[in-house]
Image (cartoon, rainbow, N blue to C red; front, side, top):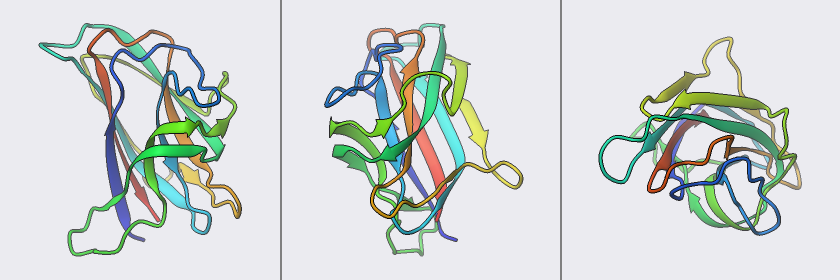
Length: 169
């Protein structure tokens, strides 16, 4: 299996608990869109917060992970890059979508698939290896995926999320 990664940054001052709807992403900042033909396995998630100037305001934040059942209509994408520099093939999945004219299809309310809570002055680093499995199954007509969105507290002004996702296909 080849391993890929993608990185994205959210918009500043994302609202909290503002579910995506129609063409309005609200607190949604990334969707790992899966392939229609091949499963992908997430191997590592790294989430942090960066302030515009100086240290981030110390605050507890929660990022929800939601399974999506259709990709939506993305208008911006951070494609996957091969981690092995000698691998010149492209990833089978589209990578991380970061903006939409129609948001992905999902149930945007709790209970979420997973929730990650952390302080803005720390980095969340989650490996999914060996017994830990986080898989996106292929879907023949719609790309399933994993969406990341802010729930709970709003990000302070000029603060952004940084996200790195590594996966295998």
